[in-house]
Image (tube, rainbow, N blue to C red; front, side, top):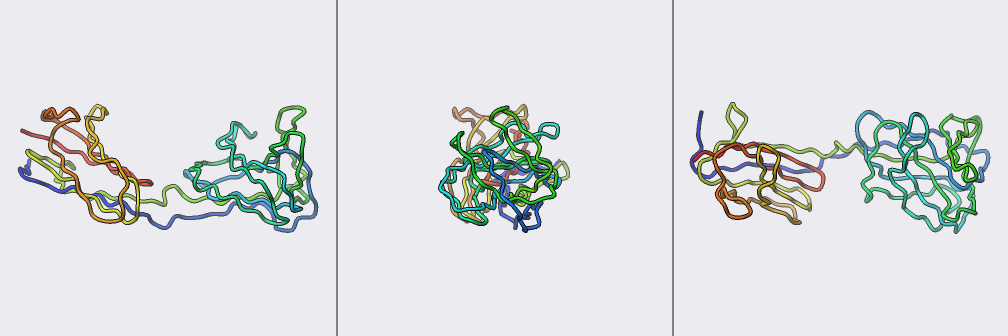
Amino acid sequence: MKLISGTILILVVCYSAPAEEIELIYDDNSPSSCFTLGCVAVRFTAPEGVWRVKTFRYLSCFETGKDVRVRILEDSSGFPGEDIFSGALVSSSIAGWNDVDLSPEGIQVKGDFYAGLECVDTTSFFDIAASSPGNTRGWEYLRSHQDWEPRDAYTFYLRVVITEKAGVEEEIKPMVFDSGQVIISKAAKIGYTLSEPTNVKIDAWEACGERIKTLKDGFEPPGNYSVDLVGTDNRGERLPRGVYFISIECDRARATQKIVIVR
């Protein structure tokens, strides 16, 4: 077993790769009618994996100043289930396609989910573009029954743009040996490279999963950085020999490195 007795460098590179973007569309962009209702949703199906919702789009029949709210719901055995997100208030709509930016909300979806619009005023209604025959994906929330009902005879003109959560990559390039671990006897520097502005948090953990020290927690611009691992916990007490882990988290990436302290 080889031993590094001086200062070593663990290099972690956090960078963004171009994220895959998909628009989920179940209409032919040729509406033939308007559907008046208080709350409507469409069942969407994301490809395999976990995705983030970027944009919600809806085709309004008329220009209106009615307040509507975007809702994203989970699937519950083929029915709209609990809200994943209920917010993004829209105070006015144009006659045509309207885009609502949901990227700041961090909404994650997987497989089937539902996205729709709801009038904030429960006594009011709005007109959404529709066509027949239906695509068996449309749903209406009936306030009188307080339940969702399928509207298989209609195609509602709602769309969702999703981006792949895995579009952000992380890479660890430490000085390692066959054991896949870094062995240190004195001091170590944890180095990291940022290609874009981001929040950074670096923690030291015991093998049992208990955090023993926060080495860095703050916002940093792009560049090369390092912090010292001096072998003490938050109370300044010396860490005993053993196995530890260093985690580095950026806004959209995470990397972990195993280290062994010997005395």
